[in-house]
Amino acid sequence: MQNLSSNLAVAADLPAAPLAEHPAWQRLKQTVEALRPLQSKDGSIDLSTVQRHAVDPLLDTVLGAIQELAPLFPHDAAYLEAVQADLRKWAETGYREPDFLDSLLAFQPAAQRVDGLGHLVVFPMYTQNGNPDRNLEAVLLQVVWPDWLAELERTRFDNPMFVPITFTDFTAGYDTNSAVLFPETVAVREAPERFTWGGIFCDREAARFRAVSTSAVDLLGLEIPADATELINDQARAQQTFVLWDLVHDRTHSHGDLPFDPFMIKQRSPFWMYGLEELRCDLTAFKEAVKLEAEGYEQGRDVQYAILFDRLFRFPVTGGRVRNYDGMGGQLLFAYLHQHDALRWRDNRLSIDWDRVAEVTNALCAEIEALYRAGIDRPKTAHWIAAYELVSRYLTPHPASTWAKGAAALPLDLDGKALNKALCDAVHPDEFPLSMFYEALAKKLSSVIAATAGITGAGTEAVAA
Image (cartoon, rainbow, N blue to C red; front, side, top):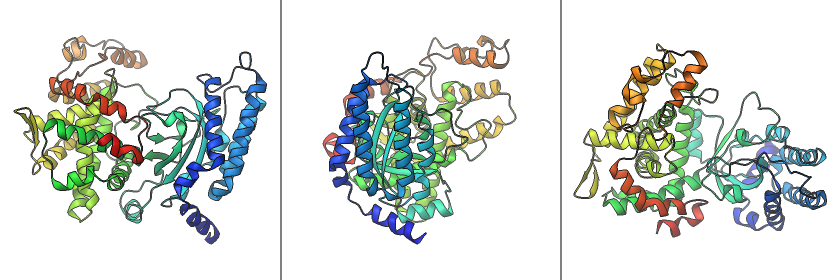
């Protein structure tokens, strides 16, 4: 154990920048990009259209680069050996759909949460909110695990699978809006019984938050407290804020009164159910942040600002309008604050009642928690209807909405899976359209939001300015 701890400490001290400039990393990165156009959507390479003699040398270069880089990551020795074996097996199959289950099981970053510890990750995978195809990707990253966060996780917010990380460098699948590294995105022959880790890039989240918040505050003429300005201007502080927000948010998916599978992986639900779940987790983080602030944690106040600004300014106007559940959640928070007079839009300026905003935000959290608590006693259909009624108290449904007409308009004469499918099919693609406020804001912020694709902490100042 002492040798392992010593190796981890040494590895954590390795500077990030030289790793990104390492010749073996540069070869690996360039070769992965050369493989990308040869791959199909499922990650396979069709050797009837691509000459094998054009592929094998590329794979050999990838293997050689990993072997050269492996000594820099002694804590990942088992994984890096396994990923080389999986790459060789992929070649042996004739580059059919890749199977990297063995190397995925060998990669266990949650067991080594050491601040600054680096990892080299190579998988065929899609990147959530990024590239939908299972291309081979390579990522250099570092763990963010400061002592104060480790203590909070140990004593208060237990979350053994949570791994906050930052980018060192990456291939094209991450030159996108993706800010997560999740094991379920990797190409495998069968899903593991359980996943044991999930990585979230706090540097990208923080940089995106800073860029969009800076523009929104200026556009809307919003006066914000001095400490909120300091947060938006400080990338390192914003990253610390997001690791705490993400820690509490992530664990909330499995805590509280949960009348259904919290991640809803194995079931299809109307998109507002996903929106309410994500918002519940954020508002729980907000509520806990209020308590932490009262106990003297400066990060507590920062988390409140981050949740408010990201939810109010970025979420509603990011992405398409087809079943955009995060967008709906942001609109719901805005409408709730507005209708309870904690937020005002007058004379073309936005204002927030900073003395009341925490109280009103926590009241919305309580409404969602009451919905969940009652849900255990309801049939699924009744629960979906109750959730719709909660959202539509504050957001105006689309004029063509079937759901807005009430239960009599829904296909309730069906049962089982047929009923669930029919109810979901009856949802309008844009069930809760943007308000006039957000339509205007979307146009103003669109270029800023588009510019945050691929952003990391190193590029924030240019975008935010």
